[in-house]
Image (cartoon, rainbow, N blue to C red; front, side, top):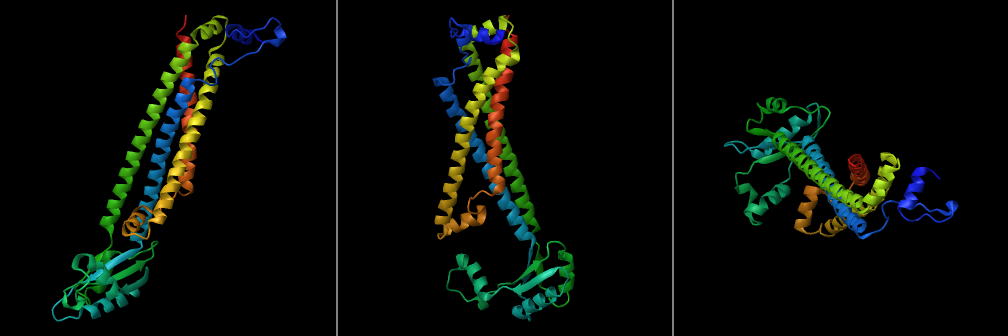
Length: 319
């Protein structure tokens, strides 16, 4: 048995009369009220961090899906003009656009669909033909080489002068800004949670050092290296970090699973349909699961590193 191990056994009062029967216990007790409280704190922090990173991943994926859908479609509005048949102009616009390179499909929105779009504002009982309602042409384009709005406008200028093109650029920019804002806010919240976790570990480490100060001083005076003393605390706090991180990550996963089940249950209602259109079914993809696992490992590693640095700093301050 090395001198350091002997000092550890003597300091803990576990050295028997026979040298071969000495038992070396950990400097920091494996179980205790403070340890259980710290596990709960780390579990809460891990839950909040995992929930934040999962929501950021889900909303970012939804924003990318929205932007992709908008980028694959253009909308042409054929406005009513005196002396012209709006329906014929819409059919002409669809025919012209269909022959352009980069266009997959161009179709006139059916009157039933147009009626459904206006029903929330005008009610169910209205005559579509009696209103100066523009006809819509939905154009599906090839994302690899879509035609520009100026090209479409030039192609329709002679035969359909009342046509206006909406390429959804404004909506794409707004979605991009929203996605970036959510990501930045999520990173900020994630950073605050990690900072709170670090502070909790610092206070817990100081408390553990204070409770075992006599043992640490004896080890330090008999020549135990800082790395050996610090490793006793690192091992203790790493186990606590893994326990708390796993519990918090598991709670976050269960929360997302429950939210996904609830959204699928509510999808038949108008509110549920709107939520699914905005955020999907709240299910996590592979990126979300990987992000939560990495978050748990990050919190456990951060717990061990924080404990190590705190112990080394305290030991170096001993005389």
